[in-house]
Every structure is written in C-alpha cells, then in structure tokens.
Image (cartoon, rainbow over all chains, first blue to last red; front, side):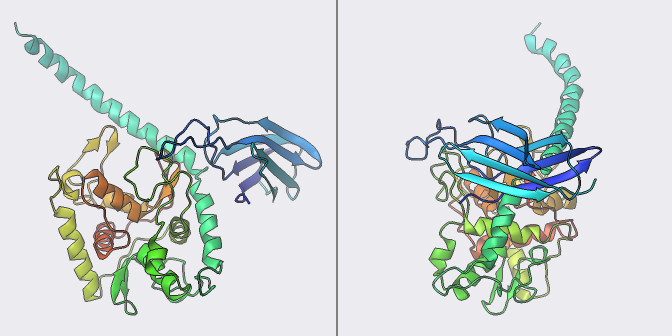
Length: 105
Length: 281
C-alpha cells in the first residue's frame, strides 16, 4: 500500500489553490542498481482530481516526473469546507486516493 | 612579451565579476531552496516516522511510545535539540539515532545488530557501491523515525547539555576527531570546515570552527532531504559521508565516536534555531 499524499487546499481569491506531495519512486526503467541489473520502470501514469463529482484536473504522467512528485494548481468553483479528492494510478496498477477539506484563504 | 603578462591584468579585472557571480549564485540557490521548502518530501518521511513510533514492532510487539529521548518516556517534542546527552540507564552519551537503537532493543526486543542494520534509506545513486546502506528505494525505519523526531523540534533553540562530565568528555573527544588528520589525503574535518569562503565547486563549506552562524545553519538543517539523491539524510549519515569523502574507514553507525562528533557540532551550533528536516540541493 502506497503512503498517503500530503495535500493542502486553500482559497486564494476566488480560486482553490491545491498543493499535493505524493510518495512515489517514479523509476524511469533506465537506471541500473549496484549489481548492474535494470531497475524496472515504476511510475504514476494517471492523476485525477475531483471536486463535487466533477473532474477538475486530469493528467497523464510519464517517467520525466521526479521522484516524490509535487503538484500545484488552482481551480475555480470550490468553497471552504468542500472536499477535494486526488487519485493516482501507476503503471503497475497500484493506486492511491486521498481527500482533503478546502480551508479558508 | 610573454603571454602571462598580458593575462595577469585581465585576470585581475575578472576577479570582481567572479565574486559577484558567486554571490548571485548563492542568492539564487537560496531562492530555489525557499521555493522547494513548500514541497519538501521530508514531510513524507516525517509522516512515516510518526506512524512507526506508534507501531508495535519487534519480538516484544511493542511501540516506541515509552522511549525516553531525554525529556522523559514518550516525550518527543523538543527532544532532538537537547541531544546528544548522557543517559544513566545505558551509561553513555547518546544522540537521537543511538538512543533509538537502545529503545528498539529494550522496548521492542530487537538485537542491537537488527536495530542498526539499515540505518540510512537507499541512495538511489547506483555509483555508490561502497555504501553499505545503499539499495535503490530502500526505506529505513531509522531514517523515518529520526525525520519525525527532528521535526518535533523545528523552530526551537539548539541547546546541547554540558552538565554531566561524560557530556563534556564527549565534546572533547569530538573536538579531537574534528582535528584528527588521517587517511590517504591526510585530511581532517577541520581541513574543509575552518576558514572563510572555502568551497567544493559551487558548494560553500561552512566554517564550523570559527563561525557560530555557519555551525548553527549546518547543524540546524540536518536531517535534510537531498534533492540530488532523492533521499532524506540524517546527521549520522552526513558524518558517515564526510568520513567517506575523507577516505577514512567507515564511521560506525551510532558509535561513541560518531556521537562525540555530533556533540561537538551541536555545541558549536548552540543557540541557533533548529530548522530541520530541511531541503538540500
């Protein structure tokens, strides 16, 4: 089971500002370990952010995203007290979903 | 006219530019650090560490919640900035890591070897084959725990104790090691960490001997997440790495020698504000 994400969601003017820190190795599949064996690719492929039943962000990621990725974005239409849900799925089918309540400005 | 005579004034004229560029670089590095601080992956380690502290582990199936880090059983808040310190039960001066080893042994029933087995998280740097602790993506219970314990002292003053004779002894031993020249390069810690504006490539080396500000900043920012290695690194790792860079024999994890060095550095950094786990280049 993957570690929980750290999510901060706060109002910034009329938009919701979200910062997410994900715990993931994000292996490219190009590296070799100390014994020379290729480290298999392992990376987040799809990220989805939903708010009030609507998808507000959908991203397709690849191996160029860093380890322990950090994502920062804003969306319109959210209010304090409402929930934002973030999910990712990686190339091995492992997934993780975390939720956070939007805070004030 | 020899070439170098033409070159000399040219070089002299260039010098101020070089200094300025260096200052700018340093400023830019500062800005970069600040930007990244908001997204410090150390938080992920801290969260795991907190969880591990409360998790029942080991042959005794016990958590570490009654571990005494110096401020009483189970007290974590502010403990890190008062370490290393003398502990009567072990009759040793211990830092956070060596104390955790003790707790894993006494509370959870691990053997000392088991508790010390995987002190540092995987480097992710495959070149470091001499690193006995490497392993891509390997997590370390010790590193996670230290990250959390350190985070519980964030913003506090670094206040090592010097009241017990053994604590003063450790400081003196640490000072000796700091000055001890050895190895194929005839190096000592002091070779790099004294004197102003010494650097390795663009990395400015802190003057741990003369500048309290440098020492406070250095000591106050470990543990730190190393962006270049994609791992959180502890103070014990930092010292182990210094020894490796000096081509010394391995510094034994949680040994009295390592604790003595931590004690020396903590004392140099006394009064500084602790700001770790930090984010490092």
